[in-house]
Image (cartoon, rainbow, N blue to C red; front, top):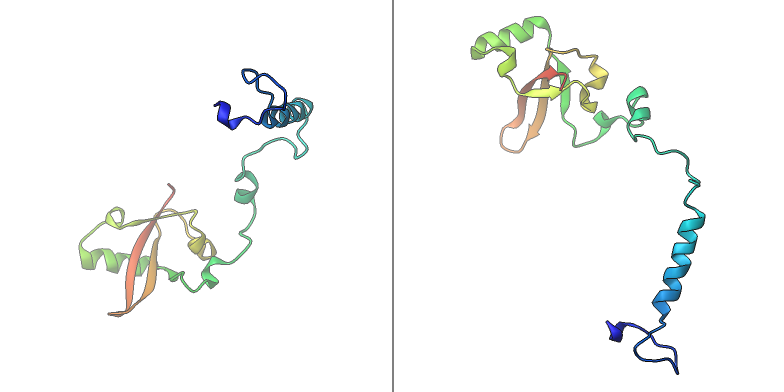
Amino acid sequence: MRACRALDPGSNPGQGVGVRSSVWSERTAFNRSAAGSNPVGPMRSPNTKMAATKPILDVNAHVLVPKHELCTDKQKATLLKEHNITAHQLPRIKLADPAIQHLGVKEDDVVKITRPSHTAGETVFYRVVTRD
């Protein structure tokens, strides 16, 4: 620990008065003077404003976001009958997902996602919309 301290010339080796101690005292003095004031303002949750406003950019315009389509009730019934499943057995997508916001979906709707594939050309996935 003594090797880390920069001693003043002529001081006792047992009592180091170093550069660190003067910097530390300046920092603590600053912290004490600014303790009661916050120049930025009160802290608030970062998502409070985001939930109330529309997204700033359109995520569907991005090259890596696949095409999302809302299935009609007839398409949904055909899909479920073909695969002999219920809607809740499908994989889920959240209602708050930015990629489906423009579709105007509601809970229990089915979304068709078409992704490009190197081997098959394009692949189709189905997701059921859930609240959580």
